[in-house]
Amino acid sequence: MSPHLPQWEVEPAALEAELRLARRALAPKWLKLVGGEPLLHSRLIECLEVAHSVDIAPIVSLTTNGFLLPRQPKEFWVMLNALTISLYPQPVLPEQTIVLVEARAKEYNVQLNWKRQDFFVQMDRKSLCEDETENAIVWDACWLRRRCNMVRDGRFYACTRPPHFGKLLQADFSGDGIPLDERSSLAEEIQTYLQRREPLAACALCLGGNAKESPHRQLRAGEERIFAAG
Image 1 (cartoon, one colour):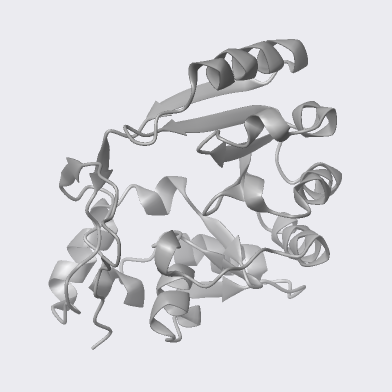
Image 2 (tube, one colour):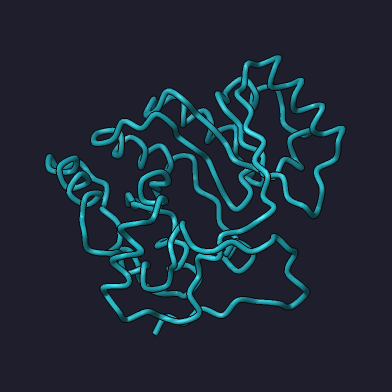
């Protein structure tokens, strides 16, 4: 959905506040900075500094298409524990960039994950699904809820989809997340939320992480996907 979302980047101070609240209830192994394209963030180094200072996870990682990696300063490599580079069929990441990244990762002891993206999972529904049984099946089977939890706009989400649907459709999907604050029940609420059987509202627009795959391709000029919120 990134090409269709408004431009946005998190403020480092807001990121720090959210992660400090999340740290009261969560202890993930990985903290991943993702996008869109995180290397476009104008204050990325500050965000990496925040990720380390909050100390919410032992591994600080970043996911990128890799094209802007040659521009990154020493501080970028020093503060990364892991780096995932998505390799798309088009455009192809230049060989000289791959060689440079391999060298930088070795120099600064950054764990590399070269992730080929020859296929995309077609998760988006063409229209809202009002069958709650079907939505519950999607929720129960989806791997995103178990591997891609998200902190965004002061809330903890079981997956990345609700806040993005909210921005794209100008709709309120905040109810799909748990507000982050200093209440004593936060950890218990998040545990209950992650174990829930009831699907999220966003599941009605999603086929889940186990949906069919299609070969990757560049969108044609002016081409858009149409999402229906109801």
